[in-house]
Length: 167
View 1 (spheres, rainbow, N blue to C red):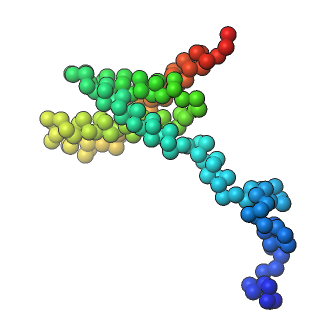
View 2: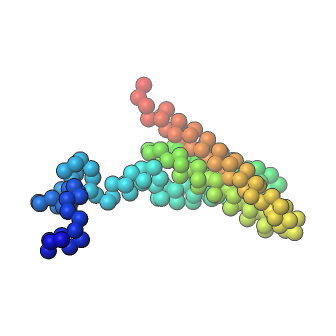
View 3: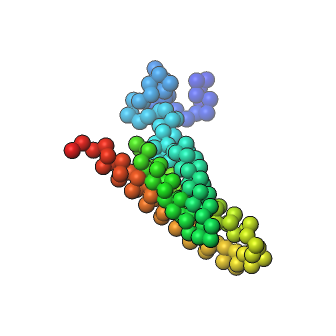
């Protein structure tokens, strides 16, 4: 063990241990790998954007609320509102964000349906039903919400592509 190497582990072959190798000044490193800690974070943001997720969640919630305002058939038309909201998001967005839209639509649909059930006049029956098969019910509602949201978003992006493509 020397004074320069107090732990005694000489020569691990790391590029940062070489003389003159400074990862802060050499972001590409000498072995071609990225020494920047933001590389993985930037790649994860390309797969899932929290901002787009929050925008999709707000639009999905608004679509579900507006669709649910129709009397007597509001439980069905809320999904029409969800499809319309994600359709508008698809028309307006230039970048694809299917994962964000699917997750936001599923969460908003489950939240909207549960809120509607728990604020209804049949609360004791609803609580009993949710206690017995609440997870399965939530998964079905989430699946329907995600499907409607992704379909609306897909058709919105398809319309945007058709309108912006040159003839």
